[in-house]
Image 1 (cartoon, rainbow, N blue to C red):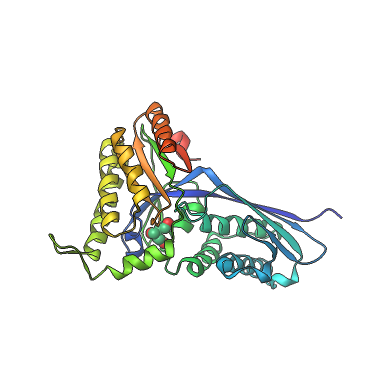
Image 2: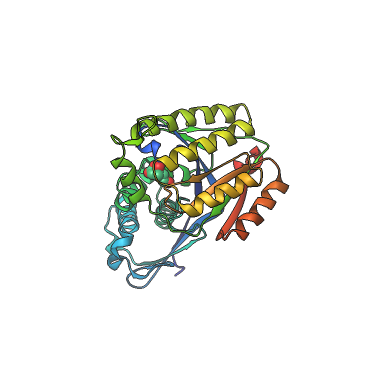
Length: 324
Ligand code: MEV
């Protein structure tokens, strides 16, 4: 008999504006990044429930606690798609990912999205969007504590999003003559720790001169995101770049940047980028810079690599290349 199979895909993501503030019901803007993705493949097996991925190969029921979020996604997907526990099925699930883990590019959400899609495909079951959302958010809550949902929303879609917690998702029309250069600092970030750190600053004064609290910085980021939405609508790269840099300063104030990221941000400014910022959870991870031409993007890519970046991707913000 032919083996039963299933496949699932998901994109990586970057946050253009609003990370961290989005946890406090401020808006954020994020884009799926096609250059990095996850593919999950599942095939029926004679015995057992086996998972194969870079971090672990073995029984689904014995996955390490660091992978408890993904384990939840697998078990929950089988339960919801077949009304039977995962142990009622026998399979091998393989996960291939080009999204660097813990670098603010949505790796954990993308892995869950791809795996849930593969399992529903394997069982020939229809996957409603709300079911995908519930399972992936459940997995993200186990991994990160208090996820806003922006990673789940962006890695499961193909369009730029304007996201506000507990509000209907808006997709954005992004068509700008500009390029994002995305650099992986090579420093492992920690979203859970970064989100916890920002929570401790909400009532605290973070700037003695202005007497601003962490909560004030969060609100300022919200205002930056609303202006970013306008800059996108106006197709104005200069304004977008300036807002990115203002956003970075606010994230620095909240203590979620990193020396290596700040050095890359300085490199971007020295090379005439329109703006640059840390992206995602921070405390390492990735940064993004905005430039106007492909030539400038390639030049910056080279500069970032010389500076020690682990990988650098270029994403056009012109319509045909950022939407499907
Ligand atoms: C992580 O990609 C984005 C954060 O805002 C956390 C979240 O929104 O869940 C840091």
